[in-house]
Structure formats: C-alpha cells, structure tokens
Length: 551
Image (cartoon, rainbow, N blue to C red; front, top):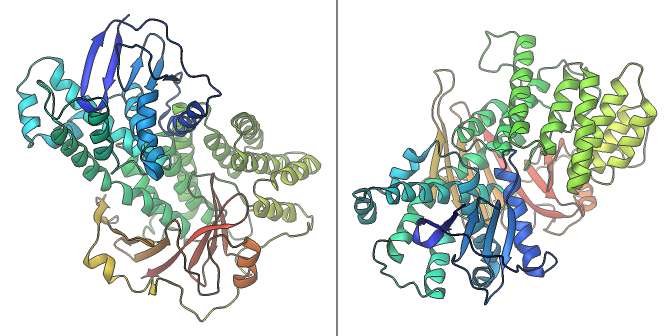
C-alpha cells in the first residue's frame, strides 16, 4: 500500500513507499495533548461518520520519507512532525490557529468529496503559477485543485471550530519554507511568494463566507429565523458540515415554535446550536408570506427541521446536538416515546464526550419527554432537570418551575428586564451609528435573492482592535450588531465588564427576555436595552454585543 504525502507548502501530492514503524510521542505528552485538542475540535466540524484518522506526532530526529504532515490511508493515520508543531508554537498567540490551519488542511483531504473543485480550483487561474500548472498534464494539475480546495475547506472548518485560520497561512508558509530550507524557487513547484498568493486568494474567498456565518447566528438571537435559515442554507450548499445542517434545521425549528399559540408550550426547549440557540420564539407568524396557514407552516417547518437534523446525524452518528434537537422536534410533534429515545442517546453521547453544556440540554430534553409521557413521570423529570442545573442552571430552573415546583433561583423570561433610558455604546459608538461600517467595510458579502418574496441579504462587516461590527440588510429591515473583542477594557452603560458575574448583570439589567444556551457560552438577551451578554460555564461575562433593528 502506498502512502499519500500531502505536503502543504509545496502543493505536492506524491506517492511513496510507506515509512517503517515509527516511535511517536506518547499520548500523555503535552505537545500531543495540545495537538489532539485542536484535532478533536476540527473533527467535530468536518466528521461525516467515517472512522476518524488517528493523530500521531513524529519526534524530532526520527528518520522519515515524509515531511511536515501527511495522511497514511493504510493506517488511517495523520502524522505531524514535532518540528512542524514547534514551528507553529513559535507563533505565540497565533500558535493554535496555525496548528488548526495545517491539521484542517490535511483532514479536508480525507473528509471532502471534492464536489466543488471547479469553483475554488479555478480561483487562481489568473496567477502566473495557475497558468503554468494548468499547462501541465497528469496529476499535478489535479493536485493543485485538490490542495486549493483543502486550503479553503480546512480553513473555514477551522474557523467554525473557533480558530482564526483565514489569515495565518502566509506566515506559516514562510516559516515552513525557512525551517525546512526549501528555498523560494523549487523547480516544478510554486515558489514561496506564489504559494502565499494562492493562500491569500483562498482566504479572500472565505472572507466572503464568514460574515454570512456570523449573520446567521446574530439573526437567530433576535428572532429573524427565516433569514437565519437562508444564511445557513447558503453556507451548507458549499460546506455541508453537520454544524451547518444542524443550524439550518434549528432556524426552522425555532420559527415553528413561534407559531404555537401563546401558552400552549409548557416547557422551554433546549434546541442546541454550537454558537447560539433560542428557548422560545417571538417572531410573528408568516410575516411576509400570508398565503400559508399558520398550522401548515408550523408542521412544514418542523418536518424540514427534522430532515436537516437527520442529515446532521448521518454526517456524524456521535453528534449529540442532532439527537437533542431531534428529541425536541419529536416532543413538539407529540411523539414522546421517540423523543425519549433520542434524548437517551444524547445523554449517553454527551457523557461519553464530556460535553457539560450538551449534557445539560440532553437531560432537559429527556426531562420534558418524561414529564409529557403517558402517564407522566414527573419525579424522574424533576431529577433530570435538577441534574441539568450543573450545566445550564437558568434553563433547568425555568423548566423545574414549569413542572409545578418553585426552586430557589428560578427565572422568568420576557417580563423581568429593568427599564432603561440609556443607549448602549462600544467605544462611544452606538448601534444606531453605523456609517463607519457602511462607508469603509472590511468585507461585503451576502445571500442571493431566492424569489421576489425573499430579496437578497446584504452584509457589511468591519473589525477594529476593540470591536467587530455587522450591518445586515434583509430587504425588510436593517440589523446592526457591535460586539466586544477579546480584551475589551470598557464597560457597558450600567457598569458591566468582561469578567463580571452574571449575578451583577442581573442586578443591573434584571431578568433577560431570553436565554440562549450554546455549547460554549450562554447568551442572555435583553431586548429593552438591546444588549446580549455572553456567559461562560463559570457564569462570568466573556463579552457582549449591542444591537439595533431598523424597520
């Protein structure tokens, strides 16, 4: 069996004999543990249900016919040289981003089915290297297309996984060429400067997608479910990852919840998204489509959501959020035995994967199924809600209260916000003042019009040292979001800072209009003040965003 060498900086896809048995860094080695954490984060994004590759770190001084990083199909292993790991580590605060870019590139070769080579592979045809390589026959031309695709897919997957992968690669390439003494000009291969230009070209294309991804999450937070679904649908056509399929389903499920008559739903549902999810909807039914009856629209949306969650599950049978969301859909459809099955599976997966927030959501979903079963199993439901308090206390307490109990610390949504006459600002800028973004955006992006009733969604994005901003024009309204960046030193208009406790937030702002439990943070949405706080598992503020909606 031959080993495929995927040498990133050279854009080289060659065949060689397998290396002999190697001694790899032990799994308890700190370097391996760090690389494995990044590797696992990427796997959670790109996995499609196939057996995941095994990660190996080859120690310095070990003889190998391969260099930098490579995938061995015979062993189903991805090997990274310790020398390359150390090179990434030398980038300091960018080290994990660099590692994610390299590993994401290699994983893309394994997981991607290459259905969109033409779109991205032709993106650098105007470059001298592209014109030269396209004149060559054989595997080299195809190799360039595949490597370019791996850049795009791997880096965007890294971004979804939480790493800033889009702009780090040119610097990584420079260091790899120097570290391995490759020289700027290598006969038959792109030069360093040409390879860097290819990387920048790929990054430019991906920068058009990132604002769409961010806009989808923001739209969910402020109940613009139809538009959020369009954003995720648009992305999923290019990157049909489990997360994006799940997100597209979630937007539909949340709009369906908003179509239930007020008071009909007893519990708050833990529909889960990696970055954001809603408890309850509030958007008016069929706001721009009055031809579809309310109940028919609700049923259709639930079925569409179910199909998308099933698709996400088929991508990765070990993906707990898909099971949590399927349990919620079954509950909303009155299929409580089916809901219990999915919730039980979600609990098992979340426990196995040590995902505290997903475990809380799974327990709440199971508790709702038990409480609504015939006959109701309210005592075991109470136990589920009580256990879920460790991971999502606010949602668990709400559902305990809905069960008929009055636990200490229970919260209510929608009526507990303190009034405000102050306008929130970031660095002296309010969400009503967005000319700075429109006049000089870093990126303009959007979602094409689907029909006359669904105009294009236009997105302008800008980022400075202290905040990032989005202006989203849906055709019906304009939404503006300004979000703190890491290390923001200012305070909200009521004195909340990064690191403040959520108890201090509640004291200053009252109870939120909605809670938004995610896998990494929980969003506390204050609709009167137009501010959304992000709280970590330690119940401390990690950041916030201010927003405005103009009709």
